[in-house]
Picture 1: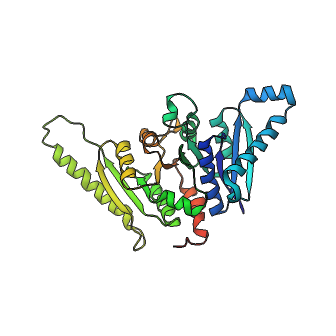
Picture 2: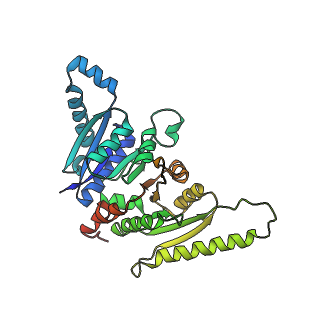
Picture 3: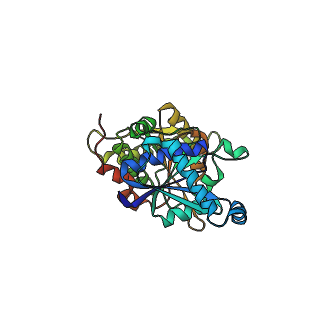
Length: 315
């Protein structure tokens, strides 16, 4: 087992985190990484536990509950090298801290909320982690029970979609998506959404502008898909409309199980989730791998490329 690679899965003992755990367990087992489970306790709960049973009681009880949750969720498929982490504080900062300290290569989290209208979209903890993470984060749908093994994961993914905005980050996003699709031998689809030009009606230059935009997009997509081995060239697609809505529609129409998207950054505020990624998470209801800026080293040396070291998938 390679102790330098870890998959981190925060859990809250909900059915949603049970699905995320199954994904994290399957990925970690397949690529030879350790699986780290994290529970973040409320400080008030810790304070109450101190008063009643002493400082270590809550941690001990939490670890026992984590072990029970693993047995119930994974059964005989449980990863042989699981670490249990218990923290206290606000969930998102603790997830980010543990990810840094444990040299995490991938975070796997469920897209669920615990209260209010946000449960219709994704949990505030997941949202905050995505806004700050420097680690690629796989967000699982709240109603996804998760795979029991790698074959089930492959069937769940079916096809990988990478929406490309043709910015500087596109090359890395496509490279990572391509590695994933090759590692699990599923098709890859590149999609570019052309947003409508906001212009005065009857503008004679509008048709020319639209034609030029499509021409440039086609040329760039061709360049992105050319540099691959023969017989593995991904499909590319250009659609028109509002980006998040079109991405969700393509995912539904094409049977996409995994969407690979970038997280935008700000030079002042640091990594932030772009509005398109936010809306895709709200609309698509399927696996989304969110890539923070500057993931080149992860692409070359972590769990996605590690998949190439395991035995080829049969059939």
